[in-house]
Image (cartoon, rainbow, N blue to C red):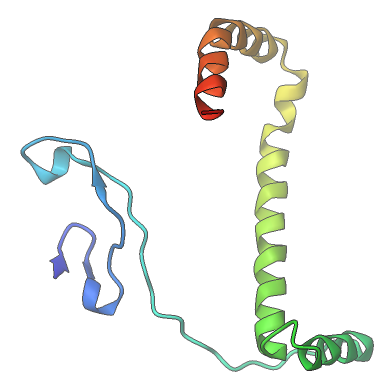
Length: 125
């Protein structure tokens, strides 16, 4: 199926999400898109300390990782996610000293306290 608004052909990945919202026209529907791109492997060369290679090989031999490449890809994904979280934390760090923000956050927290408690109780069922 061709998705002209996204410019994607789902035979080659395409949007994999469900459309949320309502309305007679597509441009009025709120959509969450997740583009599915087939995993493409690119061969590369990296220089790593010998002790890391030895440790990676040990983990593979023990069956705790599929391969050295899979272990490195997973480690890289985790590190990139950590860097993204750090960048987000850094972006919000100035709010720690923003008195206007802090007072607004307290007001919002107090206003939603009853709804938060109700949601917590519903989640226990």
